[in-house]
Length: 67
Image (tube, rainbow, N blue to C red):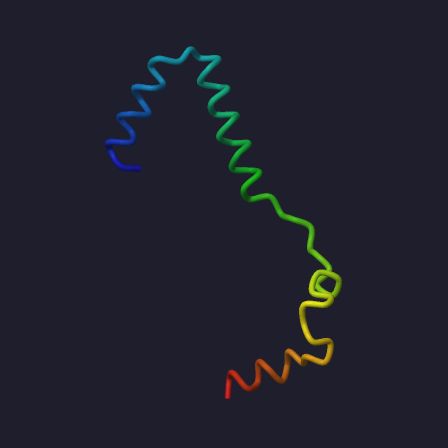
């Protein structure tokens, strides 16, 4: 974190009560947890139904790209 941001953050914290600081920490932690939470895998066959040719062969397509 750069010093400008640290300074602004320190100024903000000085104006908050201890309870408000703890609420802020909890809020930031909750946002980070939500951001990094693992999502359930989706069923690609159902998700891509009608969007991709059913005869498409991913192995053949990848091999063509590598070679």
